[in-house]
Image 1: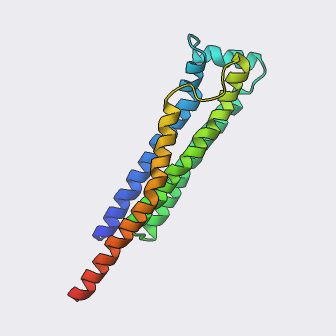
Image 2 (image 1 turned 180 degrees about the vertical axis):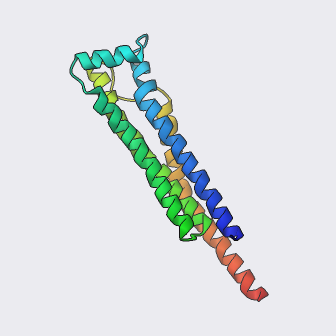
Image 3 (image 1 turned 90 degrees about the vertical axis):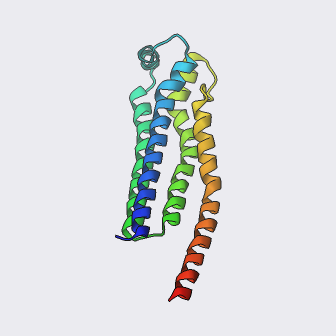
Length: 170
């Protein structure tokens, strides 16, 4: 295994880990933190019980949010693994996994609809995010999206320079 392969594995592993952390925070934000902030003083069990009493499908809401998180992690694992197997350049792997992280922005917004809208309807509170954590996720996704073209341009420039240097040395 050469240096590029080792670097690519490191980039893929790190990218997958970051996506997994993002997905975990997305799920905790949508399923725990936001409902607790929307209904101060109530426990999560009390919020769920009230939602069920009013006819909301809490289990479906939870499954949808967990599904969103799992699909994101699975996408990162699948793409990261494929890029390692195909021996992609590390900057390509980084850009692709940053793209997956960027997709977390719309998924953060969408995941807030499931349990969040039920809480809003049941308790008469606003339907928007009730904690700063949703903003942290959205800003993280925006930074990842903005980083993609920079990673590609810088990575391509470094790759071209190394190729030129190798051909001159040969």
